[in-house]
Image 1 (spheres, rainbow, N blue to C red):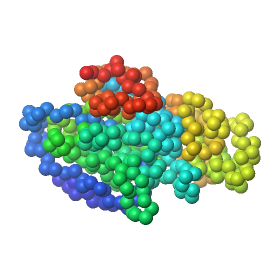
Image 2 (tube, helix red, strand yellow):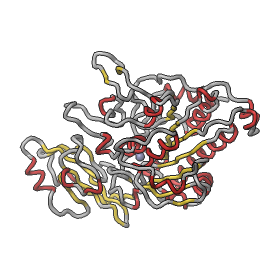
Image 3 (cartoon, rainbow, N blue to C red):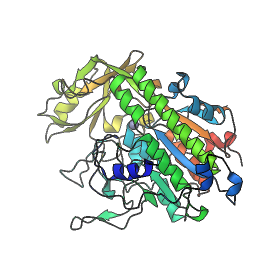
Length: 445
Ligand SMILES: [Zn+2]
């Protein structure tokens, strides 16, 4: 078996980005899990009776970044389609903005981005002048507004383990002391890994199965697993390209290896398989040059792409308002306070003063480009209106707690964290933006 040494080596390698980001040079705090494999697993014979007592179901939250629910209809997903057929499925509505970090944090907190504070993949905060949050930022300051599920579970005495998830490398609730290299206090999952795209999907699955080989008392009760490659291919080639479908097929096979690994261990599991957002087709002819509308002498562009945000320079607010707050072809602009209520976005101080949203029509999405080269080579994007059909996200739930063959109407992804709390036997959260109600009909007790 070379997988485990490879995994260990890969985890120490500072590779390219996949959220995408460049990992900071912190080693994993916990050692990679690798207790001795069980004889049953390696004999290739499923022998659950050899492992007593019957394990408590583990709850495994799987994210396949950028996976459109209609990828299940392309004939390349035998394992995911079987899990959907044997469980519960839906096309889920992401939160606005339909970006990776805001939605992953919503999935594990049950709050919309405006309330959990990860309002964008890239953002600023007046309390930290000169600093910009990026997908590499692990300072708890940016994350502390909402408690993620693994912290709630750890505090309830349940071991948790994360094979990547945005924010799972953060010492949550802690505070970074600039005078010292590491954070003060803070809670992380019992086992976690510093994000590294170089760790293959096979190694990620192997790590999860290894964690579940542990004796029952040391076995995690809540596990996350994250796959990035479908999103990367979707951006590079667009959602209909054969190369994107090849990535979909590859991740489907990885999910199959997880299911087979669980079966070989006799490990009962509730699988909740989601994506953070969908993927819209884009094209070079559907681009708007925003710096020709708002010159750099009037505002800083904080983000660009399917939506753009603007921070006016001192004394230039009226000029920015005049340039943006009028009809534009293929985009709409608002002051943050005036965003449509259904976005549930704009009250957080981290949201810049003005936001423009590009159209995502039948032909695909428009791009608000900072300049001529910005995203010019991409063929897919996300970040559009979270109710756009192109932005719909995957939801599949399968396991002893779920009915079989049930299709749910579209619900908001704020409902996933309340569902996970229910599966784990944690108290319902207080003041969350979601609810377990959409799942009551399909939950088995
Ligand atoms: Zn994403």
